Image 1 (cartoon, chains in turn brown, green):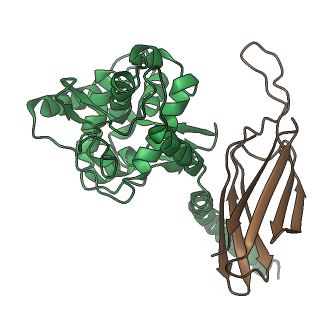
Image 2 (tube, one colour; image 1 turned 180 degrees about the vertical axis):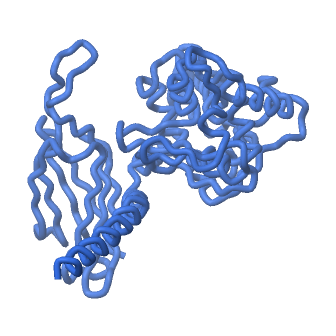
Length: 103
Length: 265
């Protein structure tokens, strides 16, 4: 299980802006270590965002996403008190889910 | 007719040149502003806070009794008054060397072993988190390094000499790049560390998250890399030389606001 995410969700008009910081190595699989051997790819593959348990966004990520990625998106119609859930799954099958309340 | 067209083309060219010049600087500013929101240093801060409170090491103790200069366990405001003199170790210490002392005396770790660990590995990786959290607790405060003790004044003078000392294969000194205004390496502005404003922005923006390597760098690592770029031998982790340089920069930048942990290219 990965390290916790930092999720901030704030109301902006009729919507909510969600900002997520994820802790992940995001190894691209195209780098070599000091011994010259390829470092196997290890990155987040699937990202899912939910609003009160209902999926509002899914994303497929590849090796081009940076280490410790930052994700920002807007959820239509989200109100204060709503629960925003974010989960990711990486290429090693590891996953992590965190939740935040819209404020 | 052709003349008018040529004129128009010239005007267009001039306009686009001015536009390009503006966007380079604006582009950097915009890039930095975008990075500022969602600085991954926050992930290190969260980790550091846990590490501070968690009982660890051979003695299974937390760091909550660690004295960073403002009394045992006081973290808020400690960062902007470091490096300073500590009577128990009889040394002027910066945040990282002080943390090593605490990890040895409170938790029973071997400080010399941690100092010899490469950056970002083992306990050094934990130090990064602690440095991120402790510095974040002083965000927005003004640097005010104490200079009342002889040892602290001596360290300032030593740091000043080290800053201007030229040596090595390239006949370099810190002052070669950081001694005059408006110097730049590629797109990186080099702060003039001999001036209060430059020292405040240069010294005051570390520790920082390095986007290019995805790591959090403390002052020790920053200075170590400065020495590497000058083709000098690496200074020891927490050595008096690096602490003296930090005292020189910190005292010069007195009154500057701490934005640490910042974010860098």
